[in-house]
Picture 1 (tube, rainbow, N blue to C red):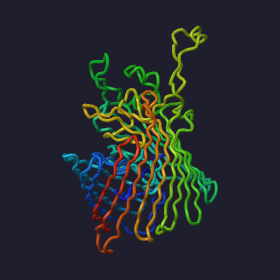
Picture 2 (cartoon, one colour):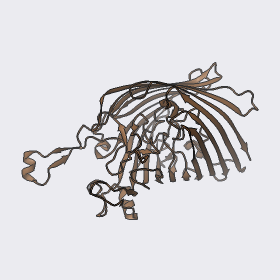
Picture 3 (cartoon, rainbow, N blue to C red):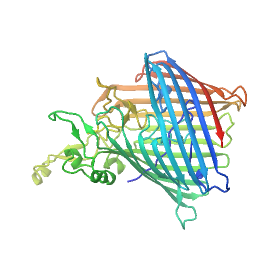
Picture 4 (cartoon, rainbow, N blue to C red):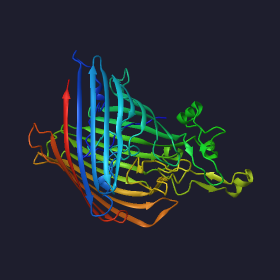
Length: 499
């Protein structure tokens, strides 16, 4: 299986120092001069709110390093890149964070990676952010509803390509691929679970201004140790041999040492998305429309769950000093999930033909981001990995999150960014959602929610002054989260040295 490994939102408060942002950066070096650079950023944050927790947009899509309550954060990062002929990039990075919140102090490694790129190929090793920010920090998902940049980074490796033109098609047809393996190192129901990712995207240049992109992305949780449960009094080690790894890659059922569910279905927990995207490149702006479709099983892959997904339309202007440089609207719908029931009782005529088969699978109740075997689901360090409107369950007494409690919802999201008086950068986001819980545990009533964000970065005192000050204002109003107003301040020192 395969998929598109792309792009998630960054905010003004979490600037990404990119090592190689897209396929255009992979062109061969045309001179004989080897180039190197070191970029760094040290930022101090202070944040508070009228409630004990911070508002939704104050903590969402920030790589899981912002605490939920008021306090402070120190974040430092450095990235090194060295480019040599012929078209060889070597890069590495380190990002550390320390926070004070709720009377406690916590530290973490955000990124620690080494990478090498040659022409259109790239290999990343360690903990490196997979998000890229297709929509300039204004999107709910950044362009990928399964991997949004809302949670912390996984340790592992990622082998990927940029778009590669197919020979003989005159640049009309191109593809890119992704193959990765990670380990989930948080405290979770399946301790030490492994995570496999494979991706394939196709791009069709149907016009000099219009590209169509089709993509499939698959993530698979497997291996790990399940705790005692029910009649099982001992921990259960999930299959983890190389043969089992091949079963995960090809979506095959487990062997005799797998659980009954994994023998009947596919070994491990498989989820992902299908993407349809259109890029229109006008003289003054680029418009993107995409339909991002989640799946949890075969019914979702067969689009039985239509119209579920995130629908996005965005405009990005080439003049980056305008009052308005970027606009985005997203409509989210995840209520259908291929229907309410996963299976149904056998009909009378079916029982006569096969008395032992009491139920037939019809493929509904996809139950996004939840799983029966890997009960922490699509969460990591207590944050949803994908679409952040799908909310995780509160940690239990052992600090373990057992999946999500709200995956049936509709939402409208609007974002606008630019520069006030062509000088002062800003972005504004407004999200309205209607939340219904899950099919198996619906909320007692529909919960409506509005979340707002306004962020800006003040101009530097001078070109030679490396300090900048950023401000964020946030609000929650509704029934899913408490009515809340929050404030974030950031003082940053950054720079770049070439050698």
